[in-house]
Image (cartoon, rainbow, N blue to C red; front, side, top):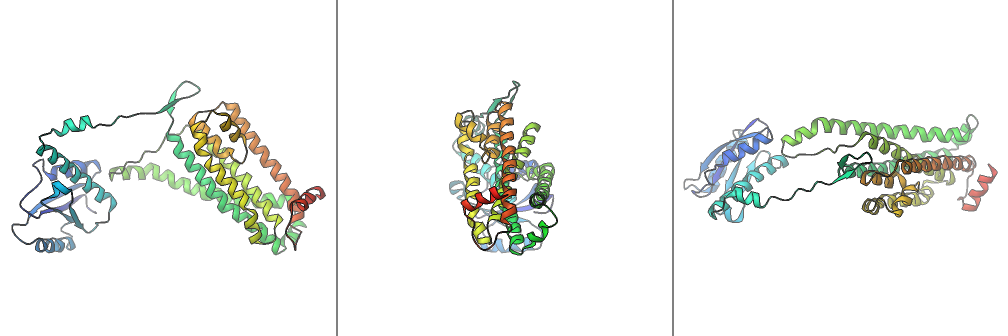
Length: 379
């Protein structure tokens, strides 16, 4: 629907109409809530066939005199069914708006016929409102449910980013090995420098894309939420403390670098993309298991299981964030998890650089675990 004031006709298949809390007032009240209003024109069939009336109204819709028209059958109060025909019949917002207005009108008419005051029914059927909050370390109360939306979102984005750009790193390493470009590059740079350059380069590409997504989400939060609210679709953006945003960023980077380094390690061990895909399956399984730790940790964030699982570096990027949101652990636990995680990144990087140096120059056969251990000793 395009105009600020939108003409909508209502037709009735028999000489009967909704009660005199008329539909126009109801539509106008709901329309004001979304900064739109409907100018209603009531049309009776006056004994004419319904198809004839519909053909006439269809012509007015095509001529853009009307946005659409509603057909209100005589038995609508019994079965609650009505029909809408219009130029934008598939518009989700307009359909929800019209359905809401009709439902309210029908409900109130049914209550009037049953001699029941609608305000009494609304008061008796009003649901309880339970607000869940948690008490922070400083003693202040904060909403304990809003942050889970962001934690789940961060975890899902981390999962997709690692899978997507991990495969990019894996493919780039295998390509350099297959084309023997690595042999030429090793004459100019150290293997460790080449590997880190590849990791950092792909990481910057990933972060650039995430920054674009973040800007798009920020624009939506600033402007899109208000527009949708006016359309009758309210969306609440949760308030997240600034320190939690910092934790989200740190654990996101931690998880990304742990797994991307493992992808580089696998790339240096194999000779074809098919072998790389097979060896990468354990990494994918680690990601999936870590993601599924979300629920048990959120149920008991202060349990021993939650503590130890949040210290395991391959799961901590997700599980520690869940604990932070559900029940803020002591700062030393968060710091310890970060230290263990980044220490793991350093260890994996050093191990990968040793294997990378030998593995990039090995061709012809699939690497085995004993052979990889021998590469580590040789380097």
